[in-house]
Length: 569
Image 1 (cartoon, rainbow, N blue to C red):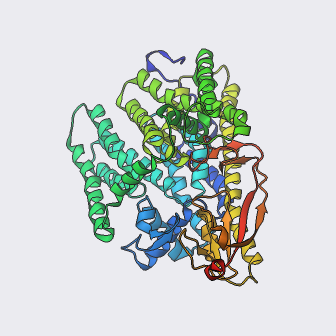
Image 2 (image 1 turned 90 degrees about the vertical axis):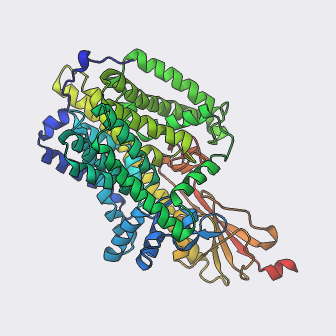
Image 3 (image 1 turned 30 degrees about the vertical axis):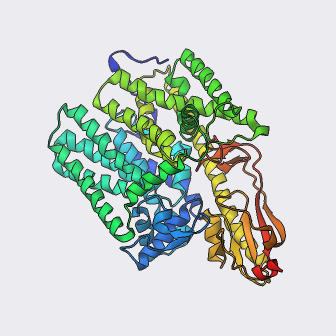
């Protein structure tokens, strides 16, 4: 399937380095400029998906800095303590709190503040790639052009920050082993702890670096003691959260994942195929660079196998836990074919690089990719692009290492061959980020419209659903509706979104009348909608990380409620 050079000799195909100069400073300036150019237009977007959880925690931290989750929130169908709702540690919220204190709490200020970890991911990928490949700039641009990065970096959730800590922890650890300087290892250990306290997946850095270090040194050395630093810090977090909330939040997240895995009947093969499909869609450059990385025979075989898997999932013959719209199964299957093929290329990159090189560096990259994939599709409570994101820098480096082996007949063809896939993936990613932003903004717009339409209505304004819609409705004075709440005011109105989570039926005797608010969407691609099978943030919405097609309108039911006394008459 692969046409590789003999003896592992690599050719320098990094035309981008030649065009912009080989100086690291110039490459870094280019990467910062392109990253800001891609993300600054989205700095005013509305809060979306789990953004409100981080913002609410940040606001609470300002008043209670040692108790980040000591308040209640309605995020399911009843009010629960925040520590029971959120399944992420608090460092991202502390960072947001610092931004809020000094710059304010608007969407723009918080998004601008979260550009720092996004830029750190791109620069970190470049510096890490310099240790593994001659085409470091290419590796960083692969990360920047991937949908997983651009869409995730446009949020104020913890994923991009976790990845920044992850990358710099590896850089310093590798440099520490190379130079035998304990200071690098000590700082790396602190970054590992910061990574794990930004998102619990960061804990996996400890066994990953343990395996890499042993493979590199061929023995256990003094470096192993530094890996005890994040273990001790996490132990302190265990005792602190247990004292505050009566429960270890790290272990609680594991219990939640195991409980949530029982939602829906799924097969291991079905989950694996959807996981591969999410990897391929969210790391689009792997598919677009396939003609340069693999032989024609390998590509044909991959497409044939991908077609079989896509048909099994798309036609509903294989239980995957991801609903497929019956009337669009052919359209969904066609997209599944491409994404599964791309995901197969990603996994093949890791396996073949390890097979060809058989050294500690290849082992690190392979376990990084395959371990993340295993967690994403078989251990996490749902398959989503946020769980794919951590493997992205490793895939960028693997692609660069693979393309180091390619030969091109001329420099002009070489430049076009490398630039066109990056440009195509980047344009799709920006388009997708625009669509995700439009979806986020639609919730904010709907909240404003609902407030205007109900301004003269007597009684309370209630809201079902969550994510950004709940955040904006509550900011306008609405109260979150819980399943067993009978305290509705006479003439009150409940706003119920269609494309949202954790909504529930209102008892018929409490409904006086209802109407529908409709907001048209015009992007022709979407990240989240069951009617197109798109589930970027959760495969429970569909088997595709994003879906092309006519995007249905966002609809909100406005239900006028009667009081309990009137209902009993």
